[in-house]
Length: 106
Image 1 (cartoon, helix red, strand yellow):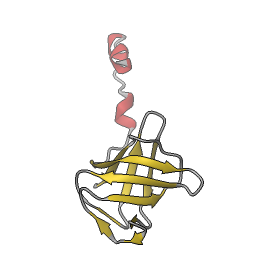
Image 2: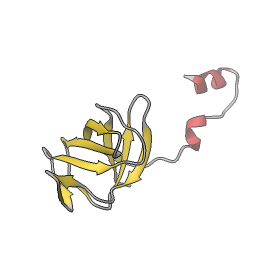
Image 3: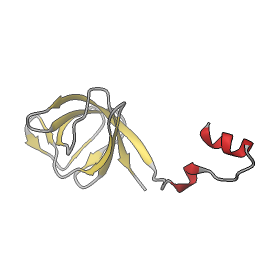
Image 4: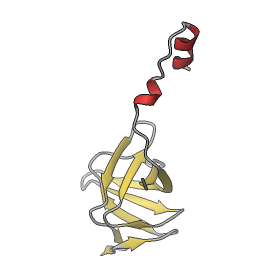
């Protein structure tokens, strides 16, 4: 690791300590992205998701957080969805298939 090289030089600086840490729980993954309308189809595999929750989308070239303003199941607005549901939410940036979706808990 890069910070271990600093220790080898006798310096006591850990760049990772500057990051803020929040607790996240994986809830699913992106199964499709509709670019023209900016909507991600997400399959929830673990845990539930509610309107108002903050999610973190992570992939090879994706890394952003956003609040869930609304979500749909089978073209019907729903306030919450549980494991096994395929939901659609509007996202603020491009996502890709197989991007992980985390719910920010803390």
